[in-house]
Amino acid sequence: MASKTKGRRPLTGTDIETGRAKILAAARSLFAQKGYRSVSMRAVAEVADMSAMSIYRYYENKRAILLHIWAEVFTQLFKDCRTAAAQAREPADAVKAYAIFFVDYWVSNPENYLMIYGEIDTPVGGESFFADSEEVATELAYIAGLIAASGTPESEVELTLQQLICAMHGVCHSLITIPELRWRPSDTLIAGLVEALLRH
Image 1 (tube, rainbow, N blue to C red):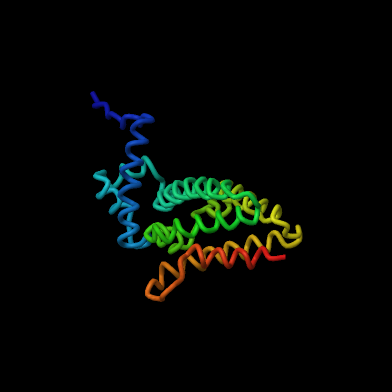
Image 2: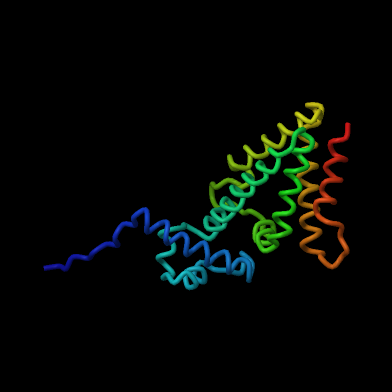
């Protein structure tokens, strides 16, 4: 009589939550230390105290882990940036407050900045870019709304939005990757750039 082979027990919601938390903690640490491209799924599994195969029960590939980390970081960052913007009385000041918080977050968390912006998003198969996600699109629309409300002509809102993104990332990148220069405070740098962009 043939012996019956037992399959793996299905993961419960708690199993998935606990397992993913261990994987994300391990991946964050490894990505920060060695860089995303230098880390294998096997290495993440080892640090997470899992077998090399069991990690695939939680994430289909390494990019899926990275996207989860990105989503967590940006969900909280966007929420906090909006909270900062909501304190302002005028739309132009709201744009400035948003930008100041955005820049301050990355400058205060350089390991997250390098982990996220130090990698080129490379979709696998039919996947889409993270920048095309609904979360990002919603946030860009929110910022564009603030820019429009500040008095920027409708025909210039999209360009101004793109210039603002470049300004924010330019300040972040400069302060994080060239810290030896005697930079003025990040809020002073980005505030001046925002004021220049919104000057009509």
